[in-house]
Image 1 (cartoon, rainbow, N blue to C red):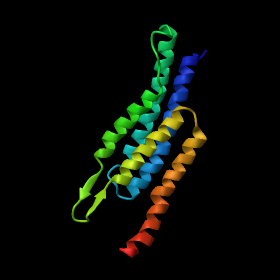
Image 2 (cartoon, helix red, strand yellow; image 1 turned 135 degrees about the horizontal axis):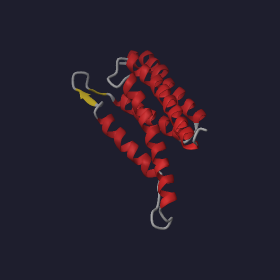
Image 3 (cartoon, rainbow, N blue to C red; image 1 turned 45 degrees about the vertical axis):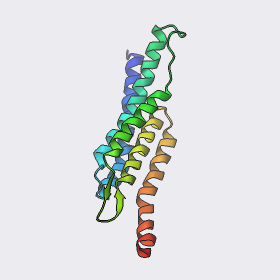
Image 4 (cartoon, one colour; image 1 turned 30 degrees about the vertical axis):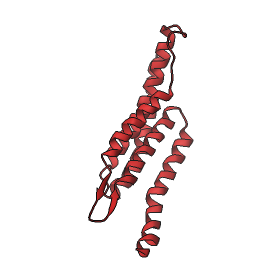
Length: 157
């Protein structure tokens, strides 16, 4: 007979695979656009966000069963804060000032990394339709709006 804990582990791994897929879709767009943070980076960010939340929730459950409630407080929001801090560190590495073009580069890639992390968080808390919708909206912003900007704003310069 299969242990329920092993089923939960399998379920979490399925969530992780979904995070890899959704992050990969956005990473593919970044890779296709020739950006530094591409397919694998976005996949791993989405995966990591999902796993950090899931393992964090498992840890909260584990501690709740072993420690008196009034001794230790659990705050799942701190898990999200830790993810955001990590993404800020990674995102900062993608942003630089291009003095030749007199503009900043990498801001959209940094923002897409943050968006991918939020998709991973949505997957971790079992909000699959939300995660899919977020993925599609981010792809719209990255791909469709890029074409819109090129068509309308590059002509004006």
